[in-house]
Length: 140
Image (cartoon, rainbow, N blue to C red; front, side, top):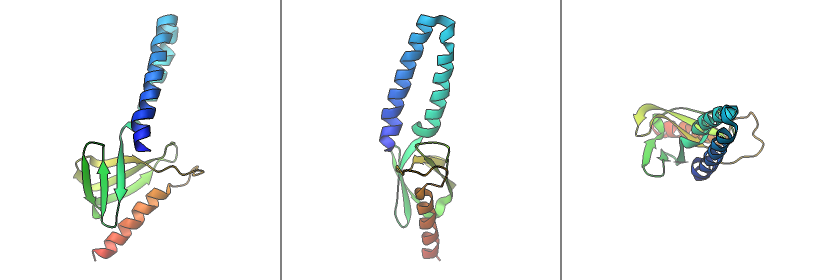
């Protein structure tokens, strides 16, 4: 789903709303400026919730992260914190690292689609936390 949200949805929404904004400003003049404000606000939300997204896979010892061009492998012991934002759909999940990675100290990925989460934590957050606990037990 990351590819869809990051590239397809973002392109269609920004392209469509952008063209609509240009048409509104062209036909309405300054009365079309609220559409420009909506476009800027929409871009900020899409950037926050979609464009920064990475693809993430996990096994018993590593987190595999990709931005569709670069793939990296991060030891689970480098994970500092895992959280999600319950106010957005699709649900962005954040992983913060102890040490800098090729993608920075914090990444975001879009959790798999899970119906009826409402304000509860996404199951992928708990899955990563459980893998972290198992990895710590393994390294003792």
